[in-house]
Length: 326
Ligand code: GDP
Ligand code: CA
Image (cartoon, rainbow, N blue to C red; front, side, top):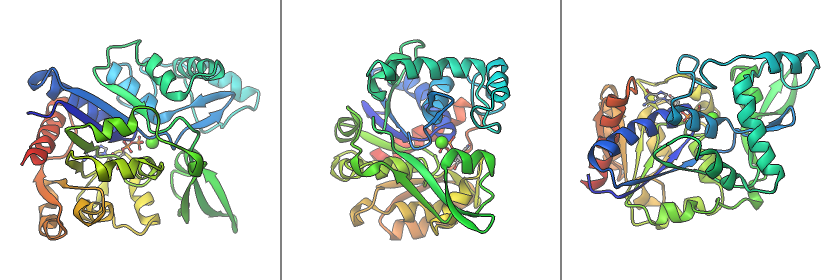
């Protein structure tokens, strides 16, 4: 494994599991390698007076080992006394739980933001509490939020992504996704450098629309990916035509992309044809999609892609680095 600087684009849960596996691979076989993770901020929202950053916190908690593995989000050993009190006051979203420990993180973050720190500096400070082993960067310091156009009770309206995802469980067909505020956003400090100076860029098995798609939508990030001399290698977030741990399929359907490992790679496109990818890993079960990818100019291989534990996930990361090198 020769890559010394590894940069990952990631969302929350899928991204965090992947980075944890990558971190064990690096610890084992390249302890001097530096891993930088560019994390989606499109799910962020102001709620009950605090700034909630779901994907950054999934990443933080998972890498720190303090996350709730069963639930897949939030803190382990969590209580909900404050949330219950907020509900009694009629504040916040009753269907959106924020545990007490989680609210502690949100309060700390909001306090730092109120002091005038940009989100990237806040993330840097929050990252010091635990030895994460990787550097976390928000995709942007500006507030860029994903909103979802739906038709509800015969009326077209827009919901914040978290409302669509959590309250409706993505059950209302999404008519369109918009990134509010994206026109004036720029990549957070360090993001463009992390992409341009990387030896390899990995696209985590994260939601292609509202995680990776949102990161790519920040003006300047796609350009950096096109310009970097590093190979860009992605991992399919979909196996046998279905998303794992969630409803990512609903997002793909909304943008007219089949929930299929090869279709997602073709949606990202080959870098040689102006797209994102030099290489793409699909699960063994999706090996029949390889010829179409090769034909499109994307180096592709089939390997097991289920992140059931750190060793298996580390093997996925190794396969991605091998594809980058080969
Ligand atoms: P979110 O922000 O919490 O939704 O998390 P991400 O966007 O980072 O990841 C969501 C994606 O991870 C979904 O498309 C899932 O299908 C994918 N995913 C979750 N677990 C696995 C797994 O074990 N293997 C693979 N290949 N993808 C997974
Ligand atoms: Ca997310």
